[in-house]
Image 1 (cartoon, rainbow, N blue to C red):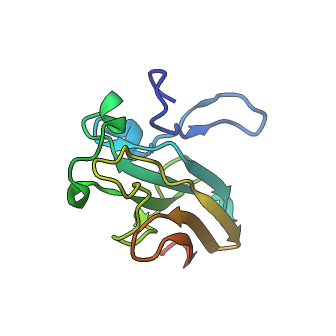
Image 2: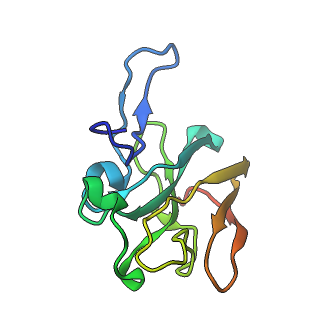
Length: 155
């Protein structure tokens, strides 16, 4: 939460005894560029080798603050989706940012000039295997989708 508006999840780090709480060096796009991206749902899960995986729903902020909830005038230009990235033990991005959802995925309602909604992120992991689920309202095939990915660190 930033500036009392729900538009981002802040990644934080702390020592094993709870001391030295601080923001991680790498942050989600919604914190780095709050007038461009809006994120209200994310999950951070433990991965092997001290890594973590952050999965988040991201959508256009349409200019920031209240624009994040202004009606969408042009669906073809509105960008939304679920992304993920590995986070290293020192809080830095440890992989490319991967888009989980396909280009047709949406949670926009069907009516004209819909008010944006947010993807709710669902994640399960087993070792390096990751399942990400989301509810999709696309008119061609609405429903619940799950994508399986295999994460890992390249040498």
